[in-house]
Image (tube, rainbow, N blue to C red):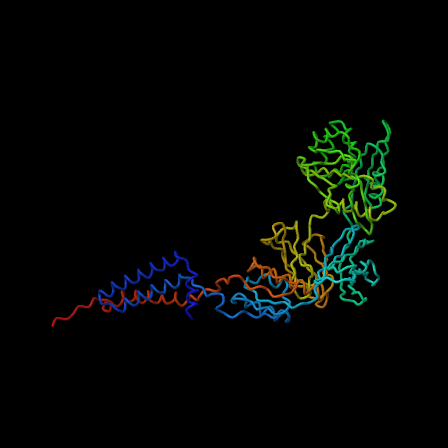
Length: 579
């Protein structure tokens, strides 16, 4: 052990710690001097040695991080070999990583160590798409590449390899392409995504699991003070979407048109009303309507015919400002949906500035607000500040339906299920651990996974509102899970070892970069390639072994006690014999 290493060892101890050990050594030295005064050299040696051993035991000296050789991990080795290599990380001073890195599940339980890693340049892919979708929602697939190129294209294929959507060739060098598709039925399916280069050669192709589920049934009440084409088109969209609609429109002073729902509205979960209807309500009727909203039913106000701004300021705390005619064209809200461009006119009166309790709920493609909300106990009031959407009911019906579906999703209608399944792993692989979490379930609830023994869900420190369990899927394909005695089931798709190799490589590099940041958060490691920077400062590693010193202290004290108690002759003071 050289001088530099000794300096590093002793530099890891604070002044207060050194003071305690110095007191112990001085006490031992004084005791040894008293024994020497009585000419008891063996006892003096024992007490001095015991003091030194005790001081060393309490020292907690650490080896510097560079004192041991880094642990070499071959990340491209089989899973069993990697698991064996990871067992040595706790005792290692650093990790010398070879290959593309490891997955989150492999890094999760490994202590932080300095990482020496230089990933090679490679083709990387990142895929972003919903695994579960409600019927009527648009499916959007976005693919990002590590290197920008021109002419490449993205295709979405059905299970029979029929092309469902095509992005077309990238007009300029880009890293990202997207495609959209509207699922026609509710079922579990495995779509395919295909990437082609400018010459039509397949760059990558793989599975895209998707579960399309029936959306939460809507039970809608519509209350309108005057007929309008906007209200009529909204009514038609809701009916076509399978919602139960109870629609009331005032046609004149004593004439009204009522459209009764095909079945009784047992639990209305959405209220639509135009601004004029709210303004013309009697105070008692308005209070009754707001009482229903406070119980958890969202009220969406169509602001196209608002006129009594004082009432909205007084009753709802909403300050409205008139729309300037000179800026009407510039204020058109723009939405690019389903291959069409929607340009919707703002309402004549819309919220302005800071209104008490009100906030922007949604913006258009140019970041202009068009939906505002205010919480009202368990419910909320939403102001929709657009008009003239009925113009697209014929020219762009799919885009209009997609826009309204997005608006309804923004309202966050409650689900009929009390449980919410969460799978944070973007790509579960056969043979590797994945973590499944459930919100709304109690700790200890038994999770039954297909082909695996039952296991209880446990709480996690970083998952405050969920309980989790680890699963090791054995093979690729759909994996079914059941929770406790309920009928709540979930299906998760497990990928094979050879699926989406470029995506696997990108996920491993991202996970390895996050692991490296655990030890050196100030120095990011880039997964796209290039040498990873060395840690700014090496931290102390393992403690020096203290068990031998502690054992030596005990032996010395027991020997001294034995000599004092059972060998008085050995401890008696020696006096010189007379001449």
